[in-house]
Length: 403
Image (cartoon, rainbow, N blue to C red; front, side, top):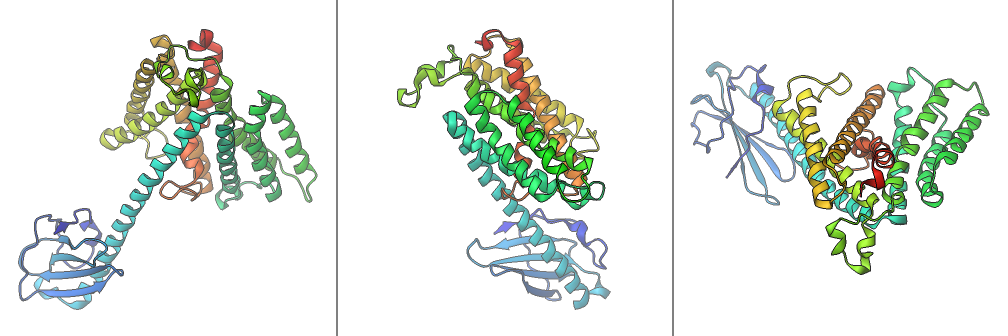
């Protein structure tokens, strides 16, 4: 016998029945004067709703385990003059809705965990591999993200105030964004590709049939910047900083057939620390906001709080410092803390930027590519600005790349 304690009695307050509070104790035998109704909720689930005049309890219990048939029982007190099948059927319908909603939430959480672990392991392997493996996989993710961005631009919430780019321009921009990481890997710089891409897109818009709009040009150019130019800094960070991280102890024990100590470059270590810091920032901010969150951070994302943000900030810096000791990079504590601060602010502003786009579009998720997570932009929004900040910090402020 298992007890379901997450059903919400408040859903029934407006009905002419007395449903006071949840009870998670074992089921008690019901009176012979009780009204018992049955309803089939799904192939494996049946609801048994019991109305009794004995004690004011509302209990939800579940018999059996999947794949066997389940009987879900709800026991509620009914007022003596209102114990009729009409009211009971109404409550039974609400009970079924609540149970189905609870089952959906459990299924979504399961998908979120499974796909989250799968994506994490795959992303870790791609980052460790580096080179063209990292670049090609990264280009595929950039293409998916660019497609989602231009679909958001074409959504009803945004098109009410502006004219979106034509579909053929959106497709061309998505392809250009996907080619940018590979161009970076091949040529080592990005300036020419960005200006050339902007020129091609502007020309295509100006030569289109009808009246070209500035809103079309601005949304297309921003798409190239947001989905193409900024993500390319992760390729520059992972593959461009090829100086060996000489002090990294892991490199000394790394197998020769996997590249040996030379495989552990500044770019690899910096990428691992940056990604881990972002994950820590998101995790600490979520847990801190759930536990202590009271003050809203911004109207762009109402669920974010100052308390959660501060806890995420501390968790991000702590993770950066700990990993700097593990990898022996960067050499100074101050540099490790500064690296964590940049990672945090990059992740927060990336998250808020995507939230602003989705809010204008009037959607909850950028897509449905990843079950339980939404679209690719929903998963990588915190990384969009961070790669550029991390790369610029190492190139500009760390002597000898922090070795």
